[in-house]
Image 1 (cartoon, one colour):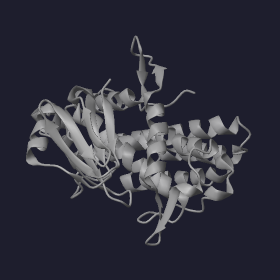
Image 2: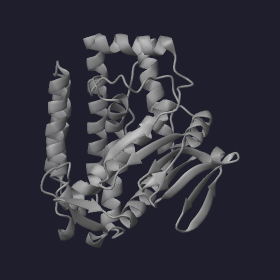
Image 3: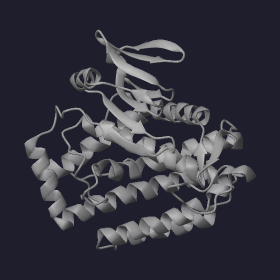
Image 4: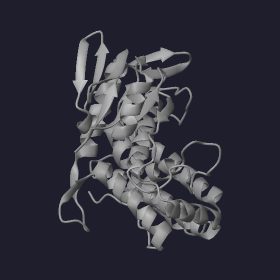
Length: 330
């Protein structure tokens, strides 16, 4: 399986013959190009045209983040699988409001069901969140009654409010008290972790969509507009609870990340590089965890499940095959 490479140090990334080389304060490090799926850059890294041409021919994406954990942009290599037929069907599905609504509801249905799976998991561990589970389950039923994308997102917003209210019970750590969701900048440590984790999952899903015939610019829950990509945001909704949120609970409850791993900068709370590396290590372990898939002979990783999810969306768009979102079973 190809790996994602994360670069936190400053230096220079370049092509060296038929492989990649990163040169920084600690010297030169060679990265076999055949082992890389995409590269995440957080440090001040110099690149050149020769590298970009090499990455394009090797079908490797570059994701850029700034110091404040914000996603800056992506070097998206020339599409090699895009199909005119699929893009036309994607556009037709977006313009057909009934079909767009089906997808929007399905993305949020999958997200809510996975939220419930997370809450039930921790409820079995004496977190006492029965009331929230009942209320969120009721909102899941209300989802079917919605007739606009905006009202679907409103239901999701209500679910998130209840869900976030469970975080303090799940973590039970005074150093990580969570009051409300804040962004740009995140106002506390939990918001910093949520923003960082979400930005990683968004680009991870984008990388998986690149391996399909879908165009990531055409989304259904998140409107297709001046935003560069939106389909990755749609599909990520399904996986955020079971990948990002479970990672947050894990790094806090296991003391992998503590309050010492954050800086207060320009009115916001920023995770230090050491904390980011530990968070990503924990998140990657979850992504590499394998499960038995009902439709496949062998076990598959959660990372592979994301690409399979994109394939299911494509089949709905091109073949009208019923789309059922992935829901965790643990």
